[in-house]
Image (cartoon, rainbow, N blue to C red; front, side, top):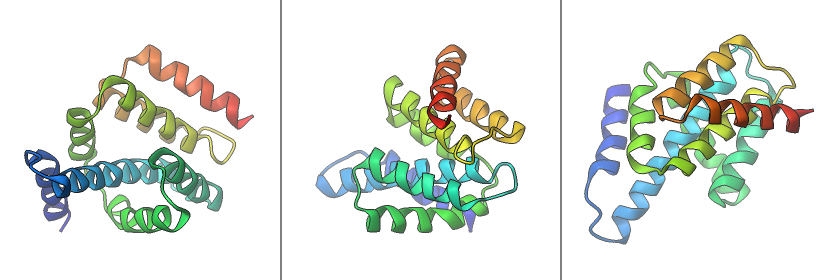
Length: 155
């Protein structure tokens, strides 16, 4: 089931854009991959608090310019994918191949914000965000600056 889902996302991204519909599918796949990674970070410490869920919703809404209803729909749809996630590689590869350096760094910044959503950084959250950052080819220095920014914003 997960393999089929991943193949669908990869197919949506890999297909050469030929019309507006393809661009919409590509954007939807990128949004889904991002939401899955955000939710995976929120679950990394094995405690998925309401504050983390609300932060994911808020970040998805702001980052993608979505209505609260659309953001909730995306997060809920991505929740099952994140809960059954076996490998990050397919999602990070998808983002890496379709985003520029600044967009990838922005995703890493969002991940750090989710990691600090409950007011503390767990070692598993820290490790996962670093791993995703490496898979997205965001430099360690830039990732650490984004981490510091998220920590400062969290108080």
